[in-house]
Amino acid sequence: MTDTPDTDGLSRRTYLKVAGGAGSAALLAGCTGGGNDDSDAEATDSDGGSSGDSETTESGGEGSSGGNALEVQHWWTGGDGGAAIQALFEGFKEKYPDIEVTENPVAGGAGQNLHAVIKKRILNNDPPSSWQAWPGANLQPYTDADKLADIEESVWGHNDMKNAYLDGPKKAAKPAGEFVTVPLNIHRLNNLFYNVEVVEDAGVDPASIDSPSALVDAMAKVEEAGYVGMAQQTKSAWSTGQLWAQVLLGEFGADVYADVTAGNVEANAEAVKESLKIVKQYSEYYPNDAGSISWQDANSKVIEGDAAFFHQGDWAAGMYRGQDGFEYETHWNQVPFPGTKGVYALNMDSFPFPANNPSPEATKKFLRYVGSVDAQKRFNPKKGSIPPRTDVPKDAFGPFLQSQMDDFANSDAQPLSIQHGLAVSPDALTGFGDAMSSFISGYDVESAYADLKAAFE
Image 1: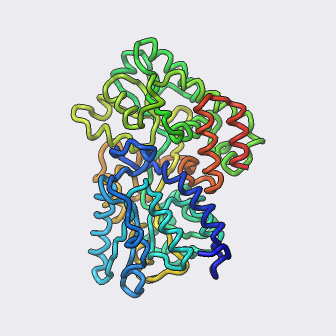
Image 2 (image 1 turned 90 degrees about the horizontal axis):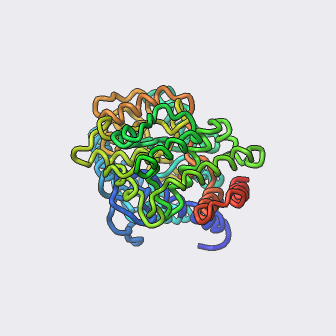
Image 3 (image 1 turned 180 degrees about the horizontal axis):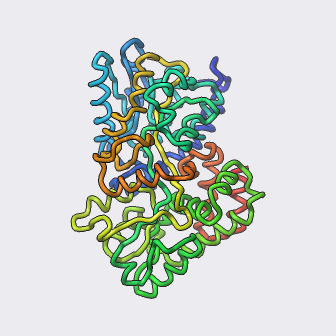
């Protein structure tokens, strides 16, 4: 690689800038479903396995030969993600038996390894047919460099996709105004999980808590009853970044949230500062070991009956479902984060279409399939996520995910995640991560506000 732009416009400088932003995002992927990784990558798919060998994963493989050869790269190499993607590929091969599929997964690094491989391959004009990618602003550097193709007619014009997807996922699929990727799944971020017995013993009704600020009083009652108010980890900053975003959304609404993520921080200074103050108040009700535990450890406090509340993406429910004798609605339950009723905050995975595609016709068929009812019915129940299509039958899903599907279908707004880079550029995401890291070190609201302003504006 050189310091000069290549013939398609993605310079080494752009590559390095994107790699830095994606490196932060990779640690915050938020697609686990109860994985076993308790490192800083703990919010990711946590599939286990070692890092992919760059000599074998960066080559074009058979997918570069075009025709009916398809190369797809992803980081789902085990656990719920591995089972889900294999179910999807099985369905695709049944529908298109003549297409030779080369799976070229890149394990480890919480997705960061795959991001690095893809960036290098695109820079070298050797992209795979498609790859697992967070949509929205995460793809902005590629759209800025014209590295992704418009697939509105060739892909989104099939399977009634435009009518089946709500506005939030469609917005994420066209970060620069054109459809360039197909979302496959949704993980909800604005969840407040709780231990039923604990809140009942404390005399707290989670459904009656109508704002993030009101949650402070509820946690105080919980602590008075002898429990931890909120199970939260602060060993790494991503959980706080995710929490702050839901507080902003719940206390001030989707329009303010969108305006802040669009870069208008100063115009919403009061909202940004107040939401930081509320998170600071929450910190008084965290467990004493919050700074040394993982999110799984924090969630275990809810399972064990030591803590009342837990904010996390819906992957946290995977731990509950895997716990014998800990049943949905009887022992654990969930409400939308206070103030966010009618809102479904999104984190998603998608598959884009590179402009310099080695197998364009096979890739179009694959992306049409990714956006189909059959694919999303196969993939999402195993992944512990819900489909972005609203017409997928619910019978294959458990009661918790069925309730999430109902909430999504009836939602008034589907804001994109800040913490996972769907709502903000890679540069802004890096700044956001730095701001949250500084914030949890001393909860200085004014300093955190200045850092957020610098990151977003």
